[in-house]
Amino acid sequence: MTRFPSHLPLAAVAVGAVALLAAGCGSSSEDAPPGAETLAIELTDAGCLPASAKVAAGPIVFEAENTGTTAVTEIEVMDGSKILGEKENLADGLAGSFTLTLDPGKYTIYCPGGETERGALTVTGKGSGPASAAEKEAVSRYRRYLEQNTAELVETTEPFVAAVLAGDLARAKALYGPARVPYERIEPVAESFGDLDPRIDARANDVPPSEFEGFHRIEKALWAAGTTAGMKPLAEQLLADVKELQQKARKVDLEAAQIANGANELLGEVSASKITGEEERYSHTDLVDFEANVEGAEAAFEAVEPLLSESDPGLADEVESSFEDVYAALEPYRRGNGFVPYTELTEADTRKLAQEIDALAEELSQVPAQIVS
Image 1 (cartoon, rainbow, N blue to C red):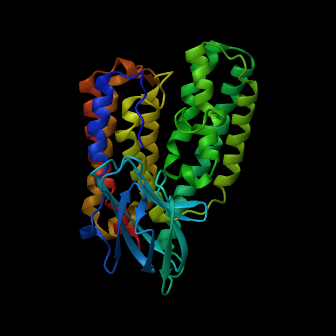
Image 2: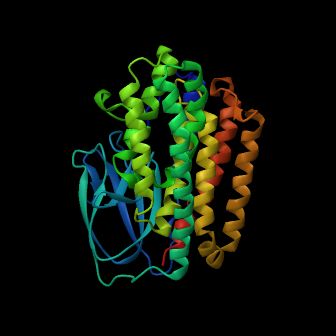
């Protein structure tokens, strides 16, 4: 469930609610690849219905609809602990979809918040075989980007942590936003790294208080408490976690459709919840995050774009144009190497940003269905 922090102005919450309505958009079954199966799933208080399902191997369109629950607003398809595809922010009455190509086997349909959160998905028949050379190259392109940014994350986190350990409040504040940029860029696949994602990037309302750590726990100390006191163990753990992330990035299993789905979901999160200012609620460096999120989504799209250009070159051109529109919408708020505090934006400003991001997300949502084989 999307949670709107109580400190935010009502205007920002209202804009977030408007964005939430658009965030349910997704590719429809009409956009599905030839021969794809469609699995319709209802989000209910009981969880996802049907609780168990069986489909044939190959391209599968997961069409999810919230039919009247506030408890369940998200669906994930998982292989063990790995999230293959998901759709978030499906409030009451909203629907959305995503497309995956699955080989025979047992998978999990995870709907957090339901009375029964996990259901079984059985995929039967013959597998699709190994990924094509073009799909392998798409993954290789994205992995290079992933490795580059996780290395940069270590490089930017080290001086930030050093400032925290030295008790240099001003320097720690100055380095906080830049340190986070590489992580925000790789968020399309952040959940592939298991509990490293919440350890590094969880917000206060995402985890139990005893598990609140990482960047945002330190952010709260720097801005809300105005001190680095007590942050030494958290800062040291953060640096250890980003170094572990760098190692995992080199061997994490990735698929082309997963990369495209992740980019779309990230933009949906930006327009549905981040637009309210909930992520950087103490530092108000949200626009730094937004730009990094868009850069990361663009890199994910560019990795799979050659696959799309073969099937729908017109859509590829539209997505590229929409990325430029989002960057142009951010430009008025740039100040030097950064941006104005998010609290300086008006309701009209945040509405315009949400509209541009929604338009991009709607086009990007059509990509996974066009590149699965």
